[in-house]
Length: 467
Image 1 (cartoon, rainbow, N blue to C red):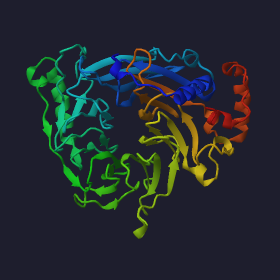
Image 2: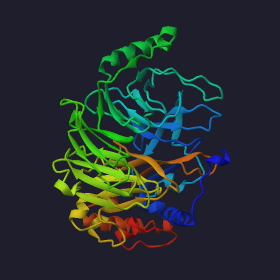
Image 3: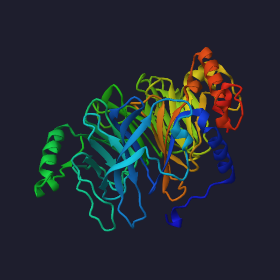
């Protein structure tokens, strides 16, 4: 990698990282580290396609942002996930400058321009929607696209579908509906744009057939115009999200610090607008709870995460009315996502390189650490910190097919790589609610204390905030 891609690491961050590395064998039941050839801005789980007694195989989608000497690419990889076991072989093989054998590149698509965000269409998991550094969005049929080699001067792959509607660059705000083939986007034009690609699903399948040998197929990349354009923000729209139960309802946040709810059935104007939801600071991310659609999270440059109840968003003249403000990052919050396995749990990542795991029920119970043990050093609700990255944690995602497993991404450029991708599964003793089971697991872990150079773990809080 060229020197311009190197990112310095502060002494405090390095010290924190070294201490975390010491505890890896006892705070995860599975962990791998994978150095990337180039920096990446987005990572997403794909479908599971095979399973054995000890492993699961699953698709993984990545981006590659090059320095211009090579083309940018969208990478489809196959990853092997090891099933739960204490101090697994993968943890013992952990080496920060290595590339993991658990991740193998399956296919590369030469991308026109940058690849900033990836989202999978739930109605057809062969279709990926991608944000570029242009106003247009691209949809790729990844199975039909031929594999390409990212060599200097290579022509880009031909998109299967182009979504037009933005007047300016749209880079990061991207969402797809779980129930309908709808795509939602936001950009620098301050607009939220909605598309329906239902009418194009069959056409894409037909185009894939022709692409096998036909010039007509290769040039098949129709443009889809928007179903609606929604105006209400006064600055760049940073993130958008569909309501899990109604694809006509969605929300957006932006650099104007506004949080807006929309309903396509009633028109292009905001239904509810929360102005200055994080005072004057940019809002980078928003996430709707899949279990209880009344709860929505927002993450901001003010280093906080706010939880809102959409039934009571504003408090009259006093302004925004968040249910709770979570404070646990030392820099801007970049990504927030609810856990698919427990309704009250969510994760956040930020510019400080940390992925935090929270449980808002622990705020209500007055406990901020797993197992009911009060930990004064931890902000309320925070019960685990992943500090394996030494620079900004750009994006992370809970695995929908493997409980409590997360993939996280950073551009911290270690060794010969351009960034770091990590897959990890939190040890169940950390979020276990049964106290008897916690005690049993603690005894079990202490039998593996050779992993911690002979140090015995006295309580569950040692696992939560020992670095």
